[in-house]
Image (cartoon, rainbow, N blue to C red; front, side, top):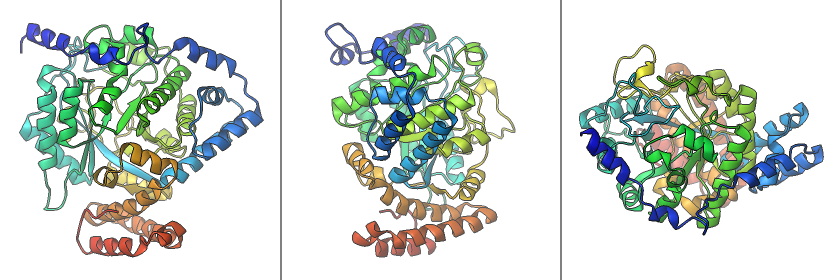
Amino acid sequence: MSNNSTNKWAKSVIKQNEIDCYLTKGKKDFINEEIISDKLLLNNNPGKQQIRDILQKSLAIERLDPSETAALLHVNDPELLDEMYKTALAVKQKVYDNRIVFFAPLYCSNLCVNNCAYCGFRKDNTEEKRKILNTAEIKKEAESVIDEGHKRMIVVYGEHPASSIDYMIDSIETIYSVNRHGNSGIRRININAAPMSVADLRRLKNVGIGTYQVFQETYHHDTYKRMHPSGPKSNYQWRLYALHRAMNAGIDDLAIGALFGLYDWRFEVMGLLYHAIELEHQFGIGPHTISFPRLMPASGSDISKNSKYLVNDADFKKIVTVLRLAIPYTGLIITAREQADLKRDIIRVGCTQTDASTKIGVGGYSETMTKQNENKQQFMLGDTRTLDELIKELVQMDMISSFCTAGYRCGRTGDKIMGLLKNCVEGKFCKLNAVLTFKEYLEDYASEETKLTGEKLIAKEMSQIEEMPFYQEHNLIDKFNQYYKRISNGERDLYM
């Protein structure tokens, strides 16, 4: 495709009428920077009892308001911080139990019409080696991911006419078609893709995606403008209302995030909170997950290495803790961007999902790569351990690994799952499905050491299940035990 044709396509992406319908009469969006700044300023010296009262509200699985969240963001007292960490984990266990859901990202293309200053994929980065996977290559990548033991995938696309909606649909159908050894395949595909029109989003809904993920990157308008000088992504409001359009298209499982390191981290946490509040106000449904990636080194990007807003490890831990407390019923995703030791610590303050065996170079799973190649991927990773290595570590942390996709396939999405999460019910189903899918992994993919320790953890989990009144009252134990026995005998994909 010629440069003229690509530029013409890029200009056609944005549908202004699908932005205007959400704006105020003054063409303003829901991110009011003056209000956010005032909330942060007025709550910059919270008292101990005030913080403890806020923690009790979070433990009741109630979303915090902006003033309460701003107060948490300013806590520096070590004693109170420790209480926040412990409360965050307690909230997570109350809503989601002790499970961690695994997924693998699959990058299908790094062609892009945007010029994001922090990204290795940006249009003007001549150092990047460009590639888009064809059908055969996508199958090969999916096979490699499945052979690690994954059942859930997030597929990532650059914004470019070569990877537009038709390509996305073909790639999703291709991945779903891959079956290994007669009983292994990807059971749910989530996508990270550029904002698109309601019509295109309806097509994604129809092809069977799970979660639609769009990160605003930064909620600060001027910073956003500087970081995104050209391409469709330069339009702040087109991106901000991407998930509104997804809801209108019938996609009710949504994921938000900010790229920490572009602007002040306290402001970005508040932006994420206001985004969640806006979605709840408009549709009665908040985000299913929130991500909090930190800026990492990327080829051809000075800002990715030298931003004055880079977030240190202590502040990063506070970011995740506050998000868990502020929106207690929403999943939190920690990714392979982070180093293993920090990732382990962050999981303990309330994360629910992570990736493993991650390759973010296009074609990286099926290529024999002994080390990361900065010129073939979007940014550099901190944790390149295998799925089995991470699972072994989680077992030592007394956390069970889950590959469950039951919620999507049982219709527990949108307002249904939000209600179940807020009432601390969904986590109980998740506990059962975590055991079932973990048993599958141990039987089919685990190393001998992981299998041995994993079976001990499963025995502990099953003892807890037998004793919990919820399962007895709802007559779930017999069915669960039958499913577990059938999986032990070789059946697969049984879920509650």
